[in-house]
Image (spheres, one colour):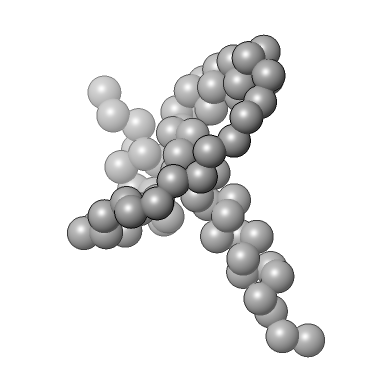
Length: 65
């Protein structure tokens, strides 16, 4: 069964867009395991979640005062 939120997400990679770049981060193995466990327990994908954080960060910091 596919989770409703995963099928009807608002963000994520837009349809038809091709990934052309990567961001690599280095974290402790335990930290990664905790993160991956939480992400999967919430029926999310880590790459989509991190992409959303990046978009939110850009949106918050590009606002003109």
